[in-house]
Image (cartoon, rainbow, N blue to C red):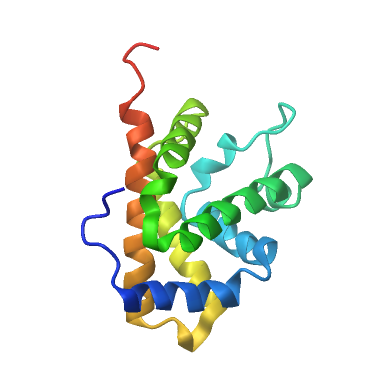
Length: 161
């Protein structure tokens, strides 16, 4: 998986160290991420419907068992990326298919920049002073690589389907 500039050894270490501090409470930290996402872009809320139910508020959505499952899955994807920092290309097919799934439910590629902002916000809130500019840059590069792979899922769909 091309990510522009590959992550340096120091950046991989910063990502691993920071993720180790966050990954022990995936749902708690995922709630911070998605709470921020809905603050930044409330129009994303209708994308999350379970059993044909429209949520009246982000809080209502964030408290459902189905959404908590979604949070766990998102955090597992981040965990997989962190676990494969030396060889992100092994996740290429998985991330491309994940991109296709997101497109099929109406997610726009542009929304991933808001998700990225929300991820950095969550890391900053959870890490406090340990969230340095170097940590921010390392995570931004990793997230950029993941999104590029997911975007290829959009590009591989035939037109008109």
